[in-house]
Length: 592
Image (cartoon, rainbow, N blue to C red):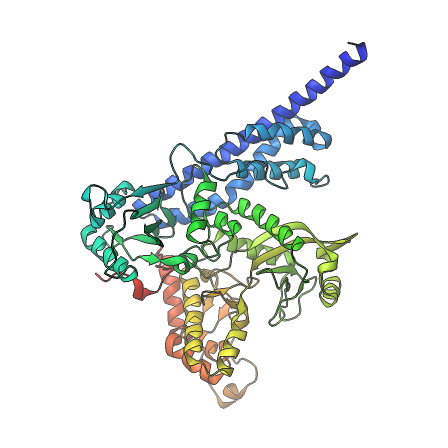
């Protein structure tokens, strides 16, 4: 061996050693993150059993910040030990190669890859963002990945002559809730009765009769959900059973949700971030997608609290879709917003929202305030009425896929938010939401078609959405129909957040009685109006302009036009009372 070769080998070996150490440090950071993530799910079970709803909300907020904190800790740890990692971009190819073997027997490899990407991009300050340095595509397959315990448990009502009710009772006992049930036998009778409505007699129990349950409950708000499916021959029934507490702190099975559509509402984009204890998240997500094959994998990861992984999968899905489609981005239908420039790709069911450079009057806010409002929604309980928003920076999209009119609008109205780089337009900051039909367009169609049943459902949902948000300590601010959307399951969801605030920041007032004829006829308010004053008596006239639609709305929600309703809601919030928000109609609840 020549002297020159002898000198080169130690250099390569030292570089490989450093790369391996960086890889180990990043994986250690991820392992700590996921350990804390699972501990949060176990804590959610304890808080549910203790009926500590305030602590449950705080835990939900803390878990959202958990990922970014662990990434920052890992960035600091890497730079402290390997300062050259900040500038030596070639090192990262070796780090990535050293990282892949570490994931061979890992239980969360896809999450660990995403964590690696987050750390690498922050260390390199995104100046050296290259696919060869990060996991643009997954390097480790997660299909059929399992842990020490299976992701779901199976029960057989025909085995040993156990019978359906006996097996259902065993299922409930296996979840080991610390609180007693008020009357489990009664609730199980209700479950069996509901099952018979889906499997009407004479339904024969086949040898394949089986009930499967995901091993961990799904915790959210004041409920725990038992999720699984029943199979009998060729029939397959996805289901979820909500477990609630009554006024005495005893547990009850509240209803039986069956079929894909009812589960899609439960796991909707307006109700993400369940707590669920998962050793192998890919196995849980794969099982859930068997129950709800229409739901994208990205949204499923977000549903189980893994929002960063959801963003990673969504970004890959977007670029995959762009390669397999040819339509162009265009301005989204509906009334144009004064704060956001909104566009969509017709073949892709999402909208993209970029903050405008300037806001037309009467909007009085700046870009930082808008971002703060969206951040507030991210950390708040969405109560099934606020659309989940994906927030991205530096998103490069093909310039040729933008309509000329949209491109002109972006260049003139959002200049500071975009850059043109060669064949790409780079969105410096963008929010992405599920596309919905604007409620004002939905109502207009129902009025034109004289479809009162459709109109009544939409306006009842509209009022219920406002009430659900108020009970969750959210005042939408601008409550016009155009700021709400209708989902594919005909749920009404709020999606315009630039004027959103908490209920306790608003002063709900009654309009003073005019003291004279001149006051009554004045074009300007004859009474003082503070910056946070709101007058609910005005809602009836400006929320729903059409007289026929307004009459329907008031038939269901006239109380929204009284200051007393809002003030009473504020008092309940101050008293720490958390209302019940059910992802199913009241009529579906078991009667007791």
